Image 1: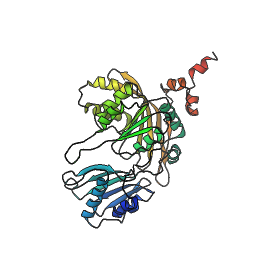
Image 2: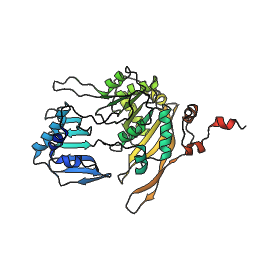
Image 3: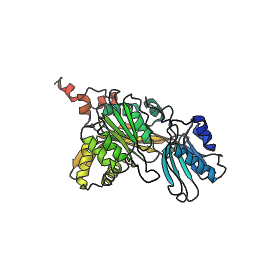
Image 4: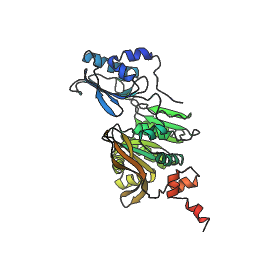
Length: 379
């Protein structure tokens, strides 16, 4: 089972010691994110709420040294000439750092912590992120090889949710994962993990996500899981979905399912291949089966707010139908938002594929939409 991307030759205890004041929050299981704004402003996120700590670096040079140490252990460079870097910690936590002169008020460091014990379906049900019925439907979709897009804003939990539903992929299938920084923690045995690489000191050696997506098609994958579509690789992902690689998944930044389609169209245009908008939308409509929208609400909680199905094209527009929607019912005395993810009552077209394959359908969906073929027996 793949786990944290431990770095050969690095002593873990010494590694955290060299991070100075960051050691304490990084080893605190309650902390999910660490944010450093200059040498003496260190914030952490605990239970969805951001709190300022009393921790600080001795001076700005100490912070820069810690950032360069983190980047150096994974072969990345960060300095005044290259002031931006995306990398990871020894345990796989995702890191972004920005130095002067781009960071005007001093170096900035953001660390999204890697979960040593990844969340499971039961955890997200307990947190209220999704319901048992919703997960039941998505599990059936994954097993029916539906192509799924997870859409959401920054820090909404897209990668976490992708990791959870990727767990529904059968163990016998060969999965290729592609990420900027390896975060996914799939538990299946047959997993090949690929990670992009930036330019080296001489400005050479870059291996972008798009190249990895194209290469993955030659690796005999049953499924391709891309951590996030950010640029022209969106076109290659759609083409893969349309040419026999059903059951693929990815995430993208968008605030609604419809916005997600608009963003995906824009990303395809960044591929450098000139295609008419209608042709792009036709590719999208035929490739994507389900879009899952996740949002971070004002109380800090993360919720699946919509599950929608892509039906096809009507003239120049991709048609969608909502299958699940989050309905707000109020707030409790602590200010937390109350609500529920409920079926809309519209019959999912993908049900026919699920019934054909004899997959387990959640009871709530079976009651709403019984298999019409079984009803025909009684006519």
